[in-house]
Length: 364
Image 1 (tube, rainbow, N blue to C red):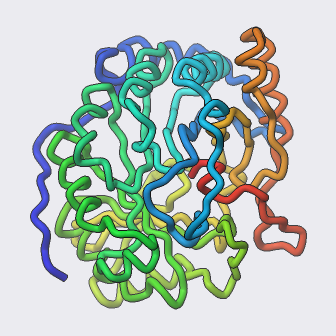
Image 2: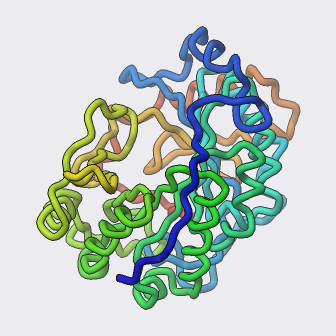
């Protein structure tokens, strides 16, 4: 693999800073004093909100969207930034302290940095992240950083440009690489890479990705292929399991060692290469579900709360937001939705039913 020069300066982010660059200095005290209110019937506390800002995207990954003729939501049905900010503020009052912006592709939503700044100004938010395909990242990285964003995940499933086009069904590989470099230059550290692993397609990307993590300082996340594709073509036989990737990286580069004291709520199980250079995580949603430690819920771009990525039911709060619903009514809807959360997604059982919405419409 050709080594790509990356930029990784000494700017680092260690928790809360002044409100112009993330959360306010007193927000941790606010959170610690807050009694968690978003608890489901299994005792799981929910502090992590994911907001889909759009269902539109500038690529067409086969595991997420149809190749052509995608039916996007009408723009008038999408929540405004003000509605998203209000919903977030209400959720923070219920114990939420982490927010991640998703899509579709969130960077196609115009002036997204303004929403980041609005959320960063909410007392109680101490972690704002984004998941992006990176194509528009080079031109927006500085704005996002200045607005208060500090965590960024770039979806990139292949380092081979030909394989990239096969997966995304679009051009754009060079722009993604430029976006990662730009994010590192402005101060994002680490930049995390999300790579979906599909049997029969991405096996040859495993070792190059391992070397990429070691050479550039990015943190790698391999994600098992999940049944959220628009074409309903998912099969368990297509899942490239996390343990197989660990074995291959350990054999062909050097052994991977589990990182101690990992966050039990984090979806990824994290490892580092034996010499300490290169961090790799695995989101094994199929082979090793982490449902019982899940602290996430999400709202779609059209204002539907989902307590699980694989939910079959949604709670509409857009009407409440637009028809003079009170904060208390919206909070009650959020609490009821979280309380009704299933024990797990049931992918590995005969009872599993794939959601009608594909990934791009739900929000990654």
